[in-house]
Amino acid sequence: MSRFIEQTMTTLGVEELRTTGQSESGQPPVAVDRLAEGYPSGDPFGSLPAAGGRHILDARQFTREWLEEVLFPAALELQQTPLDRLPAPLAGKRLFYLFYESSTRTRVSFETAVALLGGSVAGMDSHEHRPRDERLEDRIQVLNQYPYDFILLRSHEEGGASRAASVSKVPVINAGDGDGQHPTQALLDAYTIWKELGRLDGLRVALVGDLSYERTTNSLAYLLARFRGLRVALVSPHLLRMRAEVRDHLAASGAVVEELRNLRAVAGQVDVVYMTRAHSTRLEHAQRFDKGAGCYGVDAEVLARLPAHALVLHPLPRGPELPAELDTDPRIACFRQAGNGLFVRMALLALLARTRQ
Ligand code: CP
Image (cartoon, rainbow, N blue to C red; front, side):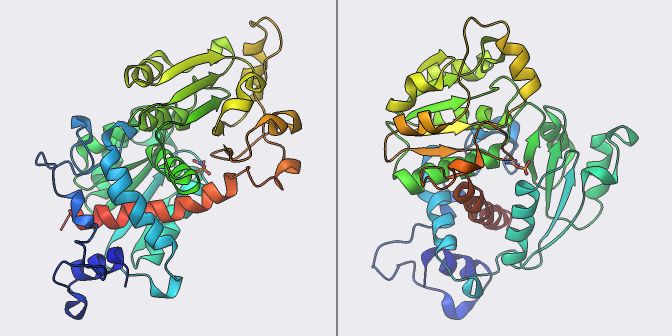
């Protein structure tokens, strides 16, 4: 029996599965209890005061130890477990999703994660309500009157998740807040790199596209800043550069950061290319202010330059920056990446449920 499943069943009080704390190998388990250990402030994920201990708001709240020793192994164990043998750590738990913007991957993967782990889901999608009809804080306090254990919020405004968390009695999970962050996307992005390349230290990463309005690259940059020996190429038009506070955070972590406008110039030296969604009107407009044409998409020439082991990631949905005709190249990992999101979110929810007991 896997250690994660064993631990989770033990949490549920399944006595016959209780062990003496030793795994089958004789080693102490990689306890998911690590979540609750070592963070006496009550914040199981790291040290970001704004996260208030239980909310998932900002990629800066996660430590690399938690990523490498707790979350990623737990996600991998879940991914390697047949669906009919999954534990039910969310039995009796209820998640409410409140989405102010549409979503396929985030909403569906969270819904599926809860269902596979024995919990239940209800929610409101973006077409079911108008933001201006009611204050976000009021909606959250109303939801707190009903027996939900988690609120999954996609806000159209940066800071929306923090505002919700400031009044919520139950954990708020930021499913993307405007141009701000998308921390659980960064978790699955980093997990995909860890799983496929075996490490996050020492990588050469290109973040490509409209970096000033892109919450996924904000969160991924914050997460990458936890690792060592990184070289990060920020490939965008000058007008759409990554915002200074994120860029500076990355550089202050010790990463070598360079800004450029042509993906082809670095394609031969990167381990990971992280594409972002094309906002073509904005990109087209921004490029008018740059001298010479930039390159913000993957094409056959970029692929020809990429190392054989490299990964091309994309949070999806994609645009012309990652043509479907190239999907047969195994380095294009965007669908494996989306699939990994299910298991990362399962692990996150199971761990979050556990810390609340
Ligand atoms: N990657 C991502 O956030 O996709 P959705 O907008 O479909 O959730």
